[in-house]
Image (cartoon, rainbow, N blue to C red; front, top):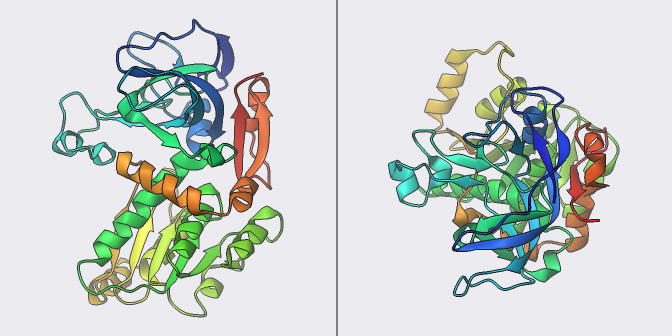
Length: 350
């Protein structure tokens, strides 16, 4: 079989390799890979910034945003040949820590988790892959064209769950949400906000291309003239920050309505500096009972929540998030972002 592999830590080492077909262990599904999504994490692994190969190996199979079709499934697994499935990314640590022991491996406290296609565990960018039945998520066949969005949608599902759980510490009826960034995470966060009946605003930099249209088709409001303009109509009760841009992170934390919640989902590059009036920020956070929370990854509950949200979404709108579909042999193009990209995917079969 063909698989997309990388030598972690070495820039420009991504290539398509011929590897032996996998043999499923007891309790595992054998899955025909259909598509994988390419995101900033994949590009960072490709650039040599991070990533770890499985123990005893030099190369890592990439791919954590998966979609496949079951070829074989063990008796009693709840799966059958032909099922459309996505593989969960993270696995709990072997110790395990308290969070992992309770199924909350997205909140691992000792960092000994593994991740498919990222950390010590081969990913899903292969024509055939295996996955433990308990870490596979069955999708409605109607999601065939957009099921590869499930992993980023699971990250968004967790972010919204964090917001709502924090809000439930007291009376909480948010009305206005601001999403910063109109990439896949930002647009899916906007979708989830619209599904909750909120007044959704999205801030990005571009003035043309698919992003403004996608936001407008959701019934949300698109902004591209900076944070001040985006909040001129009212301070948001919730901010989902999906860029990692330091200036936006600081603005988001300090500009919510009273008792506001800012959920940070974007990761900032190290070494970037910006001036912060810590005293004013502290005064705003404390005096208004504001909360800032970081959120990353997802557990099985979030995958199920995301699958439900995608199934309820406008399928045509979701298809428009996938702006480029490329064959596996054209992987290099997928790792070069273009101005109008939202989500780029690779098809794994012929």
